[in-house]
Length: 459
Image (cartoon, rainbow, N blue to C red):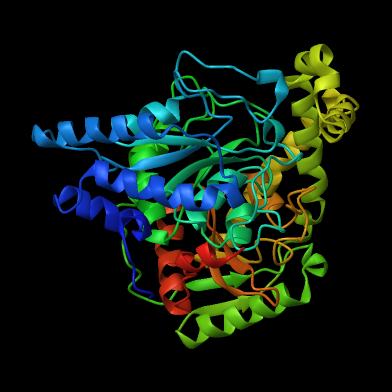
């Protein structure tokens, strides 16, 4: 593990431990992160809103709370990047669209309120693709600014990968957490649908929209999920019973090597040679560490999963954003307009059929995973593409978003262009604690950590 040179290089778990022990003040921590951000933001453009005085004032307030001896939450004193489709009271939330320019919500999203109950605070608002769909914002990949960071949670992934914050919030409707995490070389976690509430977040497809997070290590993701899972009374998908059962912190270490299903998936042919090679090499490393791996494909029913996902996503988006498009069509990107137009052609019967098929696939995945602790599969086609015109292909994330299963990606190496490559791991619905434990085992077995200190040396 590379030597860490300052507070800005701490993992979330390390930062929480040092803050709790009184070895580090929140103000000093926030100041270090602000300095790191100032050094890299001109090339990375991770934030759409960042106010140093606001961040330092919040840090001083956290230090005052700690001085009173009040028992802190799990994230007390942690500065967090928040995707700009997530409402933040008194702070602009513009959803990456001129339609919402200047919008300042009076009330924070439920997940932000939960973050604050746990002692964390909003460090800044991170760049999102337009309405969290496809047209990218200005963020660049911190490893090479000529390459996309992925999307739509592009700013959140880049900020964590570059050491600007230890934790950031994002959302995923197709591949918007897993893809940018893989491209930027950090851990991305999309928990089971319903674990992190969505009220106060700009909706796109109510069935598919899921809240996720970015960290540097698997243990950090477990800590963050434990703090941020909550029952959201204003979100119909929120699963109160599931939240009550969630036991992912402290993270339980696997006492035996896991049983893994290596799934290439129906889109394996779209993976670049470097990603295919990385996947097979990673399987070999996991086997060498003791994992029992069966290379097996999903049941044939999943061959229609991508079409089912697109029908739901387009159909629901057209219904959710129809009024917005009618009023502001000329202010929306052509790519979003085309997708919403496509969605209007998805009739009620076709949408109902797609939703029913989703239920069939959820049951199929539950049966498939009965003999395994997790699935391992590629997260993306390969390294981040050398473009800023789009955010990359989400095809390797689609199935897992469709069924609402927990998915996590962790960095496992670099490709031929010096950009990160990842491994995606998928668990059973509501089996988030087990997925995190298995992912931690895999992380230790692979023993790879991208050194974000080196990002500063890129032009």
